[in-house]
Length: 120
Image 1 (cartoon, rainbow, N blue to C red):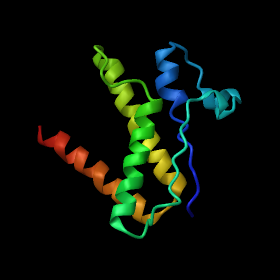
Image 2 (tube, rainbow, N blue to C red; image 1 turned 45 degrees about the vertical axis):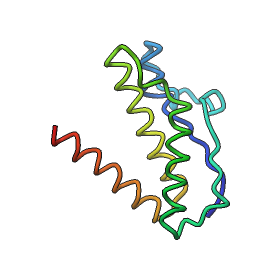
Image 3 (cartoon, rainbow, N blue to C red; image 1 turned 90 degrees about the horizontal axis):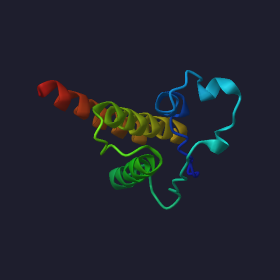
């Protein structure tokens, strides 16, 4: 199941909020053509091996950070939206790949971030 994936990030939550509109882009019938996307190629990776899964996950995270707003905003609200955008884009891409090893890796990483936040 090695195919390029797109990362159509969040038009509904972050962009709708940033543009101060209550319209959810998914409900307007618009295609994802106007939503920033990046293809992540992974045909050269073996997703049965830990290093292949880690590399794909890093590529997905990098692509998500490219299409989402910067987390370095002076506004805490916009920074939080940017983090949510990256989180949602990564989760969506992991789901789209459909590789159990990548899903498990993602779940482990996401759980670690939750545990770290709870320890603060």
